[in-house]
Image 1 (tube, rainbow, N blue to C red):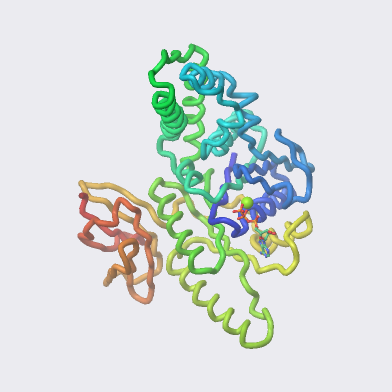
Image 2: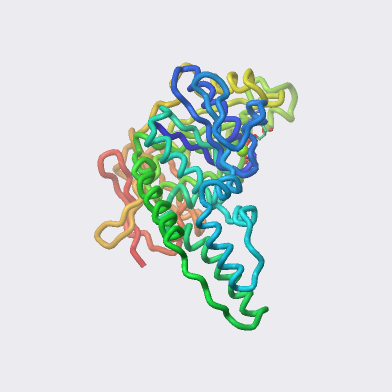
Length: 390
Ligand SMILES: Nc1ncnc2c1ncn2[C@@H]1O[C@H](COP(=O)(O)OP(=O)(O)OP(=O)(O)O)[C@@H](O)[C@H]1O
Ligand SMILES: [Mg+2]
């Protein structure tokens, strides 16, 4: 089973791109499910249909699922939810309802990964197209590395804070109920599921991330950050979708001329940050992006006759390693003369690499911001930048 995950900053076109891709895949004969992990669901709007809380068939080869945490809590995670409720009650707090549990950030993503694992086991689909929420939690969850601990810390961290509050208001700590066997079993099942889905998520030939962005400065910066973060956790980011590109014939007059020139500069900035990644574009469409016809047009613009299931590269152009006590960033830079490499620090967070006629800007992960660069050089078609471990 193939998993294509679209992510990116708010409002760039993730949902439209996801829906367009899923629709196209279903027409190519793939058994496809379009899954949304964004609690502000808009897949229904995009496809222009009503969507329920369970898997729904839209047409031949196309199902959709908008993951709803409240629904999942009530139906599939009852034990855990009941335990947390009991815990709250024992502390003199009101019962916590499924609705309140749903406020924990990132829960949609956890629930979605459950489904991914289920679908993988059932062999029901050839491909899952996942539309995500524009949050840091999405990135964290996509990157793992240890999703279950994250989840447990998060949920129980919130519970602990409630207990702290109870202590302050009620005055004394009451007996804390121990989690029942069922609760522990549920958590065990959760762990096992996450362990299983990890194999698929970390297989660069099956799971790939595609970043959606617009040709705008802040969006590009944010996309670079996401790219670095995902690369840090070995996700295969193999394609970029630049959406809302003004067509060359955008219009007459100096306003459009300036806009096009500006866009040209941003496209260059995109290349400097992401080459040799596959870059797809979609033009700015003057009409509302809604309904099947628009989505078909969008898919055609982005993928043409290509099969969107294609894995454009089986390794992300950027990867990070720790070797011999030093941190390394490895960048795939084919077709360059690597005999001379110049590195410049642009600001605390970013560096620029110049080699031959090519330039790359790299957003450094937080862990490397203060590290000293101790060398850079080529090995095969990869530029390796070495950092001193703190
Ligand atoms: N190429 C385009 N041309 C014109 N409008 C577009 C284009 N792509 C998307 N839109 C419109 O922009 C809006 C945001 O698109 P979409 O919902 O796909 O973005 P998103 O990244 O999923 O947003 P969010 O972060 O809020 O989930 C929608 O109204 C959509 O119709
Ligand atoms: Mg969206």
